[in-house]
Image (cartoon, rainbow over all chains, first blue to last red; front, side, top):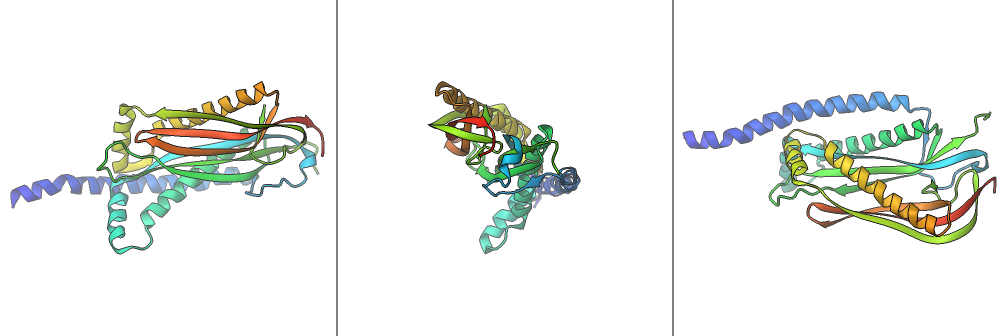
Length: 157
Length: 108
């Protein structure tokens, strides 16, 4: 009786850690993202390739943002359970959403720094950053967002 | 040098196309970062070490692409694309490519 209980203890501890700290980090991150987004509301972001009224543009430069984000222990466990019955993996959906949002905001931050008012042809790239150990099921994803920032003339109507 | 991922450069006119330029880099992460990442996989959150590593690697790929464009006598690169591929476990290749052009200021 005793040894089984003891062997389950680390897993339980990790679950509590994942749920507690991971959940806290996620909520704080989402709140911070919403707040930061408001700062860049004046920048037009689009994935259109053709820049309208490109003659009035003064300068253009590529801007990018990227982030590598890790899932927590609870998310990993929930996802592997979900794999048995199938369906939406909600835990990973929020993870990807956070990562994309973060990458986009970092890109906008760069655009703001160079004084751009628009970002065109925005693309997102996602890749899995694999762990070196084979039995580690936890995932880490990299999201890279990039686009062309356009700086308009100051004397714009 | 102007680097954009659109086909034209807003505010500029492309006068000459020089051709495809590319830059790549393969980076391996070190064990220390892997251990830190293993811990982060318990609690979740950003892996800052990896973010820095990849940003730095991508910057290098772009720089190599830019120096190639310079050799061709171009002053801008348009339609830039990026790809990432995992070469082996623990190493990633970052590849940037685009078309080197000569651009002049002015409206089309």
